[in-house]
Length: 501
Image (cartoon, rainbow, N blue to C red):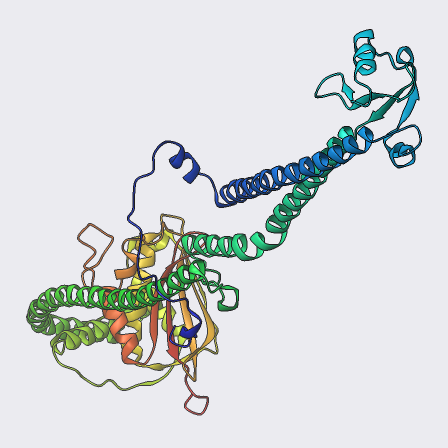
C-alpha cells in the first residue's frame, strides 16, 4: 500500500452536499443502474441542446429572410410601378412578367374598372397574394401581371429548417454513439465493472482477483473510491491473516492441552494400576513364599518316582511334571523379585521349540484338545532373549488365543523375517479364528487389568507382563484384528547373530 503513487490521487473534496432522502420520481430514477441512468441524462441533455440551437437560430433566419423578402418586394413593387410599355420589361422578366387581357388573367370586372380608373397603380387581390397587376398605359385591355418571390423565401426558410434539423439530428446521434460506444464504456462503465468484479471476488473469497490493478484505476472520484477499497481490503486481509495465525496457534495450544490432559488421565489410570500392582506385588511375594516349600517337596517326590518307575510313558510324564515344577519355581522366584529390576541372561533361542513348549504348558487346559494348533514357524528362526521369560510371553499369547476360539477352532503360529530399526529381527504371529478383539478394547489391550473375559480366569495382566518382557529384550508387540476374522498378536524380537547361534 505504501508504494503507490500518492501524487496521482485526486485531491480530497473539501465540501460535501447535505444528504437528502430520495422520494417519488427521484427515487425511481436513483434505482436505475448506472448505464440507463447516464443514457437518460445525456439523451436529455443533447435533446435540450438540439432544441435550444434549433429554436435559437430559426427565428433569426426567419427575421433575416423576412427583411430580405420585404426589401426585394419593395424594390419589385417600385420597379413594377414605374413600368411602361417602352421600358422596364427586361428587368422584371425574372419575376414571370406577363401581359394579357383581363379575362385571360381571370381578373374580376371590378378590378379591371379600378385599374382603368387609376392607370399606373398596382392592384393585388389581397395582402397574402403573390401576384400583382397593372394596366398598360395607352390601352384599355392590356394588363401586366407580375409574380412576387414570396414562395421562394418560404422555400428557402423550409430548406434551412430542414437542413438545420438534419445537421442537429446527425450531431445528436453521433454524439450519443460516441459517448455510448467509446467514451462511456472506457472511462465510466469499465471502472464500474472492475469495481463490481473485485467486490464479487471479495465476497466469494478469491484473493487473486479482489484487488483492482493500479494501471486500470482512473484518476477521478471513482478511482479514489477504488483505491480506498483496495487499501481497506488489503488491511482486512492482513488482519484476517493475523487472526488466522492466532487461531492456528490457539488450536495448537488446545491440541497440546488436550494431549497433556489425555496424558494426565493416562497417568492417573497408571497410578491406579501401579497401586494395584504394588498391592499385587506384596500379595504375590507372600504367595510365592508359601509356594516354595510345597514345590520343593513336590519336586523331590517326582525325582524319587523317576528313580523307581521304569515305564517309559510314565517317565515321559514325570519329566514333564519336573519341567512344570521347575517353571513354577521360576515363576515363584519372579514373583518374589516382582518389585525390583533384575537382569536376566540372554541367549540365542530357536523359536519353534519355544512355541511347542509354551503350547504344552497351555495344553494342560482341557479345551486345548478341542482346538487345532499349528506351529508353522521357521525352524531356522532364532531370537535373542531368555527362554523362561519368552515362554511366559507365548504362554500368555497362546492362552488368550485358546480362550478366544470356539471348540473346533484354530490357533496358528507363523514367523517372518523383519527389522527393528537397522537390526534384523523375526516376527512371530499368533493368529486365531475367534471373534476378534472389541474395537473399544483394542487401543488399551496392553494396559494393566484390561481384559475381555468377565470370569475368574481373566486378570488383565497377561498381555501387560508380556509387553514388558518383549520390551526388555528390545522387541515390539502389537495386537490387531485380521481381515478374515479373528485376532492377531505379533511379537517382533531381534534376530540372533549366526555367530552367536
